[in-house]
Length: 453
Ligand code: NDP
Ligand code: 2IT
Image (tube, rainbow, N blue to C red; front, top):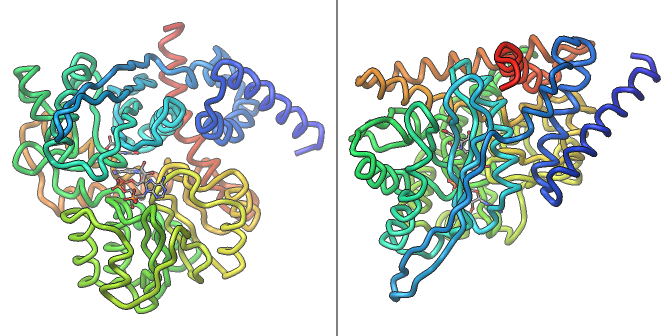
């Protein structure tokens, strides 16, 4: 590309981002997510002018609708408490809105808009007919009793139920929302709607949940890494891996990596990380699952139990590894962390979390041409199996563990191949560009076909 052409493209991106920032002041995470995608999509639209018309990207970055509401609930001391909740219905061009609910004190409208925008492109990549949305609340489930969480979830659903439905918008879990919260929300939804439908996913197996949904995001992320490694004649077996987080995504990433013969040497939570040079093998992982999902304890206890090092309030990116799986939260892997990983010879990074790598970190990985699987491709396995849960609910059947896992492996391979198709550059595959463009094209085709709606 000539210098003049790349200067013109940069000017287009700057112009677009200037407008987006002006329309959405102060929404830092939303700006970051859109800019990362625009850097792939705007050059693609210049090369393919049929996609550069009708304000497609401008319309795609404006949510269809946002519902903001108060959630009042009663705590264990009899005090009334009030939180704010949102549902961002971002884009339903290719199917009903679909995406998780996040409960965390850091939740803001900006965070949910970034997640909703990413979800639109991610869901398009899954090959399934799903639009994109996201929701959540600044409610902090930590330290709350089950009954407090129940009362919060029930109260939230009294309002949310007006806006969702199996063909309208289908919420699921995310940070702070797992099977317990989905069950409370689904129970109240079912009562209010007086219909038993698959309006939420991630449900318990006894009431319409799908096998492998719990494992799907972590397993999918490892399957995606496997596909990336295969393009270089390499594999998972024998690799040393660093994982951040110890929630749903991280635990099942560790599980699948270990099953495929890798050694996982770290896990973390917001208090710090543990470094276990012997590896978090199956027995230790069972203990960790119980710690995190039943006792809701802290990762520090793992170090005490198994006699390894705990690094308070630190992240694991200085630990030498072949593969890295940021699987906790956004912007947890920054430029200096990327430098440390590259310095230690990392060959692949797969984003289990949404937008865990900041702009500087991602640029370094791309410049180094390592295998970098961006979130909207690498962690799409979770929402893909949510889509399969919707299919099973609609058909009123349940597929076996093997059937669902086969679908998941197939979908991750399709996503990978689609990224390769759109991400080929001289001598390497730019998965960031591949994922953004492949996700965009399908939605853009639908929006162009609909006209001005
Ligand atoms: P969980 O709530 O199960 O676990 C979250 C983990 O990340 C915990 O270990 C938590 O530590 C840590 N964490 C959360 N916020 C922070 C923070 N601000 N700083 C440091 N650590 C933090 O969530 P999930 O595993 O479901 O989600 C993890 C990531 O994966 C998120 O980015 C989510 O959007 C993404 N994702 C999830 C999918 C799913 O199916 N669940 C699907 C696709 C992506 P602590 O307990 O101390 O808070
Ligand atoms: O970020 C995500 O893809 C999720 N939290 C899962 C969403 C879903 O609908 O299963």
